[in-house]
Image 1 (cartoon, rainbow, N blue to C red):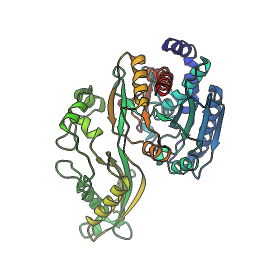
Image 2: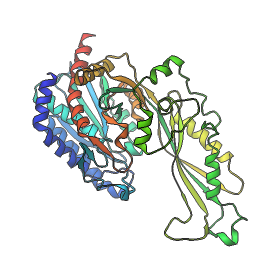
Image 3: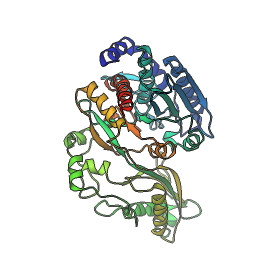
Image 4: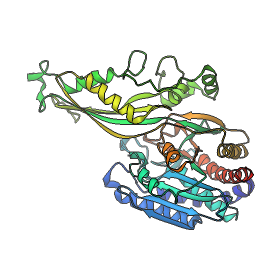
Length: 460
């Protein structure tokens, strides 16, 4: 199996591959909202069907206490190494719908990109692996055994995945985990993600008076929970954008000047970055570059804030309650449960006596570093080099994939993060998109990983 054979089969079937992906994207499998539950079930069944069509010996729906997990496998020879592919079929909510140029669950192609919710995160990237298995199966060259675990709760914290993995360790036994849910530097500069930030996500509720009050009668005499919440949020960072929670940085490992220099040698155009985002300037923790802020430093952001009257026109009300959703991205060595406890203690401590504060933890995950000296990483590097004609650059991603640390703990296997998206793909935002180049390049490159991983594994 070589690149030419792969490209030949891919070229003959690229329209069908795209149509199949569109069929999956049209299923609005939003895990955060129960009203989409039927499409969650349809999406899981669709993947089972496509796994079987692509050559899987076995594919099934595995029920959980939440959304189902899809498991599939093709075992050609027990003596061959095994690759476990992880992905997810659930997607983020498409709100606000009015900011989409076209309906979020009706994929369209504009300027060589697929515009739709889930096109990149993670349906487009996950589906590349199913089609890569079809390519290898058609060519009669399956260098590795392949297993798939594709879940429906990644966007809401993978609450039932750990239970499933711990109950099915033998079923999921593997030599390496392969995930495509990260990004490239750009389409001309291949890269492999070697670090991921962790996550602590909480919702806060600030309660003042027992009911909404008339802002004329009570304004100036009673603390407004929205005002209080804003002040509390402002107190979470100092003037240098450093997080003020006591103990927050205790576990953060400071990189050497040499390592920081190497990180900043990755291609990055700050002016293009600002232009793409429509901003005049960047911001963040003082003393660090943009690449460092999103790769090796923790962060704290407000993901949503509300309270009082937000409808049309005016309503002069002093609200009873105010709310915010807050996410903290963590770096290796920080522990998401510890950080959540630190946040809760500190946030309550800075509240005035005039209000009550409730902190509700949502989902989280541990940060992770993947080894760059393993045969799996070398195989991925060789695959990218053959596909692109240049070696990939190791990078650290600002996002979180909590499953990486869980796989290491439960299965004892390392993960290769072989993503094909771009930071500009607007994942989690209106008008999410995924390049046709990236979709097809992934299908071309993944079989090469299997080839090189098998060769290197057998040579050890």
